[in-house]
Amino acid sequence: MKRSSLAAVCLLVLVPALAACGSDTATDTRAPDDRSPSSASASKEPDAAAPAKKVDACTLLKPAEITPIIGRNDGGRPDSGVGESVCLWENAETYHSVTLSIGSPGTAASDQSASGADGISFGSGNMAEFAVGDRACTLQVVTSVTDESDRPTMVKLIGLVRTRL
Image (cartoon, rainbow, N blue to C red):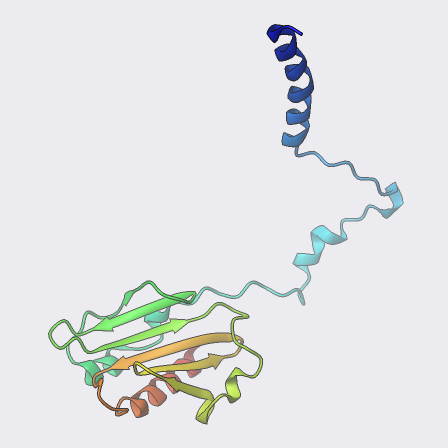
């Protein structure tokens, strides 16, 4: 078979196949009586679950609550990290900081709220894990890296976050 013939055969086979793959029309095989707009109107029903509102972690703690802990700071700014919203407040002179991460809905384990006293699990690096509803959250307060003296402050801030989220 000549190359030009082989190319023509390939084009005849591949072009319709590729065109069919790119098609976005679907054939509805249901009977006309079974076709109902119920799926289109389901999201408009009042008891339908609405998507969770996006959270801005930087709005959950006020400057008057952060400044006494870390001193003069940048006022809080979005930061990278794990969670739907992460905010970092940092004192550029002392490097003291507060970092709050709010998880997306559905990220908290069902038994996470019972993981420690007040539902708070403390880890290394002055990190605390807690849940607010179905969101897994973390808070890190760093003013002392040699002891656990920041823990009472974390408990207080977590209490504030829970009332605002």
